Amino acid sequence: MTKVFQAADATDLVTDLRRSFDAGVTRGYEWRVTQLKKLLLICDNHEPEIVSALHDDLGKPELESSVYEVALLRNSINLALKQLKDWMAPDKAKTSLTTFPASAEIVSEPLGVVLVISAWNYPFLLSIDPVIGAISSGNAVVLKPSELAPASSSLLAKLLEQYLDSSAVRVVEGAVTETTLLLEQKWDKIFYTGSSRIGRIIMMAAAKHLTPVVLELGGKSPVVIDSDTNLKITVKRIIAGKWGCNNGQACISPDYILTTKQFSPKVIDVLKQELEAFYGKNPMESKDMSRIVNLDHFDRLSKMLEEKEVSDKIVYGGQKNRDKLKIAPTILVDVPFDSQIMSEEIFGPLLPIITLHNLEECFDVIRSRPKPLAAYLFTQNQKLKERFAMTVSAGGIVINDIAVHLAVPTLPFGGVGESGMGSYHGKFSFDAFSHKKAVLYKSFVGDAAIRYPPYSRGKLRLLKALVNSNILEIFRVLLGLS
Ligand SMILES: NC(=O)c1ccc[n+]([C@@H]2O[C@H](COP(=O)([O-])OP(=O)(O)OC[C@H]3O[C@@H](n4cnc5c(N)ncnc54)[C@H](O)[C@@H]3O)[C@@H](O)[C@H]2O)c1
Image (spheres, rainbow, N blue to C red):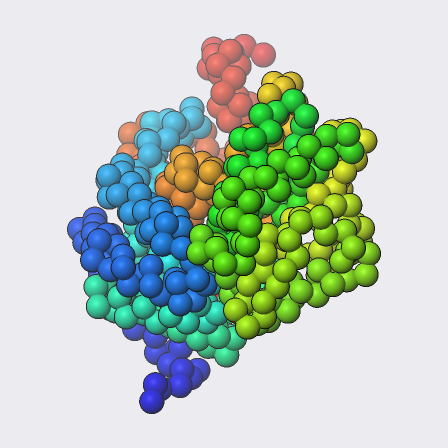
């Protein structure tokens, strides 16, 4: 029988890890590299087990597991291994006349003991990717995977315990009770991935200890389709980013499409054709799509579909099998804005299309709603691309593709407003778990008497000139000119 995780366990855990951190276990370059290499070994030695756990939890196809979870993690680890020395090196900073003579630098300092709480939809990627950042920056870390992907959670616990230094890296499995106990502890950072609703609980718990947070949340990510587009490629990319990414259960999955009334019949026709080409005449039987994670989420999605003034808007799909947790790719047209499907994040295989008179109205719809994690536009019109990028606020924007910004480690990944705060990936992960410490080095030469009392008009003038870097005024004061 597994031991129940209790309040004292949470306290002991943090005490143990803090002892390791204070002893300097995690600070050195060598320790960080060793742990990162162990994470790489996990990917190399256990890919089949990872694929199998993801299949148990989500029916995730092997290609999606191998590429979007394991291969992306490998990339992330290799990048950290390659760049860690550079990231760790202090950045020289310019000094000013006020402190002359002096030198200055920005030192990236580990925060201490950090907590990573992750979600069920990409359980390996979303658990290990932040841990890569935490380790790279020299922190001790506790990972709490999602209980809704139990096979992945227990495999993560097993592998991290087997490979990593347990004096500084631990996994706690569990649900609300265990997470609540963890949240009562004092952490140096909490990195949370999940819904905005729980994000608020995390932030309230963090506020008690003034703990900074990164909140990687979700939202309704819109896709705008202009008529000046390559429609076939547009539609293929939308399908790959929606149903081809965990069957729509992805944070940057297209949540709804906005297009013009005039162009929408073409969009719907090509969507139907390509969906059939990808998943066959009976998509419920396709092995190339994940299933819905559990009954709660299945029922939540069913309720969205069954709502009055929504159920009669289905133009494609709509089939469901509760026993197998399957819902077919489903397209709906012009559902009401106040329906559940248009008010809440869908996070599943349903895709409403909203038709409007022109693209400006489409942009206005996005601007009038909570800021999404991603916003997408398909067009060949250069001016429109620029207008979208400059005037639409979202965690990230992609023109003419879906979700691929996630694979560019030189781009920060994170939300804004309702879709979250803070970001990670590549160097941004290192920065998310570091304190940027200002360090100024002075010597004893050039000790200026003007900063010390007794004060005088002359000292005041000279100090003001120095603070403002006003060279002319400095000379005037020194030469005794008024
Ligand atoms: N921004 C991103 O990178 C990203 C990635 C994946 C998912 N998401 C978002 O996450 C959401 C779906 O994930 P989810 O269903 O796992 O989210 P969730 O909020 O239900 O759960 C996430 C984590 O929170 C914990 N949790 C649940 N209830 C809690 C409570 N009352 N107190 C403390 N902890 C609690 C869970 O155990 C889990 O580890 C969607 O909104 C999606 O858009 C965002």
